[in-house]
Image 1: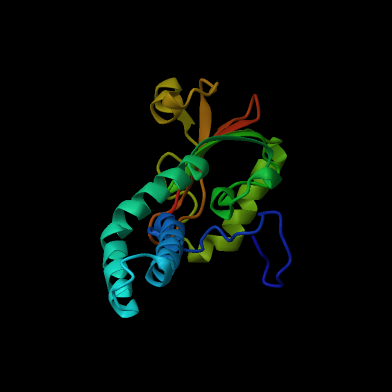
Image 2: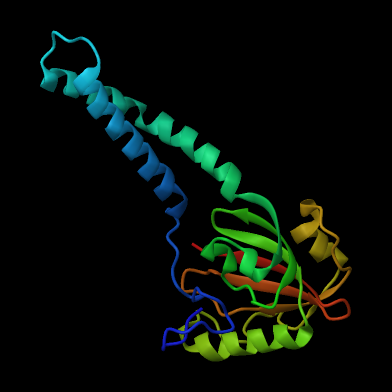
Length: 214
């Protein structure tokens, strides 16, 4: 994330309280589909039969076909893209995470990161020195408290211990080795409810993170 001066800070490269459109997963498939069909319409209008049609008639015909095919084509392209941008990933460090959305609310000192990404957030498991995590969270609140939809300590489970049942209910289906207990912390929250919940095992210095953005 950025200081006002524009230099990189310990938070990374993306301010956590910056809004993310809920429709962002559709943008890239839409763009690719539009470009592909547009080029196809132009090429077919110029070179494809029926040659006895006037060029404008061919253009109108293929443009109509592309309009009908747009949603199925966009859906197919999105399924292919989603197979690469959502799902299970592993990174040795924060710097290996390729997309800025998956860096949101993630401390730069995180290492050995397991992550499951989905369109509106991610789950993560990583190792981090406790001093680094505590400093990250303190600085996060110091920097963004005034813009947060909630204040530090407002959540009733802040600082409470999450037992094995709660941890399994949240992270159990991900196939990760999880601690049997952890202390719960919360990030500042966006006005639309986005933010992160951290489950910190202070014995093993392992953090489980649940992040959402809209």
